[in-house]
Image 1 (cartoon, rainbow, N blue to C red):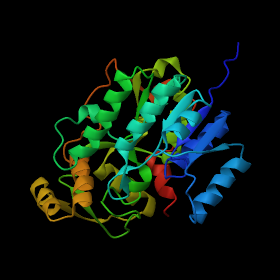
Image 2 (image 1 turned 30 degrees about the horizontal axis):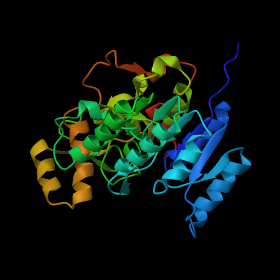
Image 3 (image 1 turned 90 degrees about the vertical axis):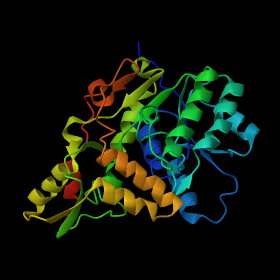
Image 4 (image 1 turned 90 degrees about the horizontal axis):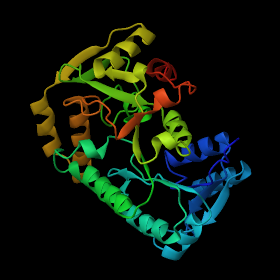
Length: 314
């Protein structure tokens, strides 16, 4: 017996990860609905993207997080809701807007699974995070609390470091292209982190939505080839370009001092870097009974290794 695939609503479908989720959902064969604001207006790129989705078979649904009834109407069309609105302060931190989506899902009463916008560090492991970076994790935990108190079935996705933001710049903040000359290491550069191609994040996420093994669990995406220290990422790049980079190092104390001189949004982001590259918050725990690991569940997905990802910059 072939189980019918769930109908999927993607909120934030024109965003950085959202557009990849739409693509993956369509590729796997789900009826895919994309919520878009009626006031999208003169944003020609988003309008063209939406109609591109439509040409690929997606259904466009007009609605807004500020219009409760439109949300309820959209949610009633589907079985699964995935939210991919931004949680990055340097772009737009909108995590708590999802509480409106939770209210709509509760009222609609038909949703079999909700995947809120997480897609990074597991906030449940970050209760001791430093200010002001802690706000990101605290807000995500507020959304989780609302989901669970509302009795909404869920899957949380912890996808670790987006490769585009971390691998491309050899893990250096505000750098998206790898240098062929020099690199600054965090401390000794040997703290392990985890990097995942954004298209792979989307595909693992879509694979999980109808899987009973991921119901009310956290899906951790930990590709074994991509659990690497910053130094190992740099060495992979050096091997590709056949050249050794000049390396300098920034100590924990120096990094924290730099953070203090930044604006609020920059401080939030740099604190996250601190926890990842000095404390190793992504890889310093074992997955317990509350979680499952994506590459073990879906070995058929041929994920992109860091070395393959870096080849695009040659």
